[in-house]
Image (cartoon, one colour):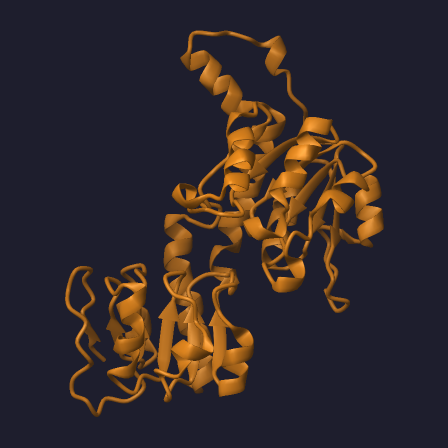
Length: 333
């Protein structure tokens, strides 16, 4: 099972011979293990990471592909799917599927396959790092020492032990974070809107009201859906009974950043660590987003990073393994 164009920078011709069945078109860069993983399950690839978003529809229409694999380059909409009438599945190399119109896939009878298992451990570890950085003033202290300042008392921090950590969302990412918190001597509460969310030994499932009443730290682990847009807003933040720290390793759009700034200014949000933003194209911010971002980037109690929570060498390869296994199961292989 050959993979066409498997080196970045090469052209992306339709597979040859044209009669080859079951080919998956890959339009984003993937870990180099992809070839071997998909050869093992008998799925031929056409690997085209250098396609622009505008070129994807034509590439998809050039051959009767049965699979399409994406990261975040393109939005998978009903319009795009019309260019792939033979598609049986769309694979999202990662956890979030906010760039995929799930209703359009369902209407076309196309399966959606994603890989939250591939980067959940990376996100769980990174959330620990963000929490430690926030409570112990790591980023601020680092900058001060680099400037020749030695301010120990000003950087006296807080310990995780003894605190109540509230997780909003208890899927793959929330559970990975909770498992890693288990050694810190803290209490972990979780709220999930899915009534069938299974309990485990790492967090107590509670109502949103109880979470708001008890949490010292609020950590966001919910996917971005239309219903979750600005789920964390003024009303939710002002209902927190304790002044708390906030972490977001989920999606920027689930948090109203203007409300966060109001919370930080008002003191009922003690600090924030954000791996994601409402608009991650920093050169294309609206005036309102610019004003919010300018506050966040200069606030001493805010830690920012560029959406790297799930971005490790290990998760990069593991996502391939997860997708290969799920696609093989879908195809009955």
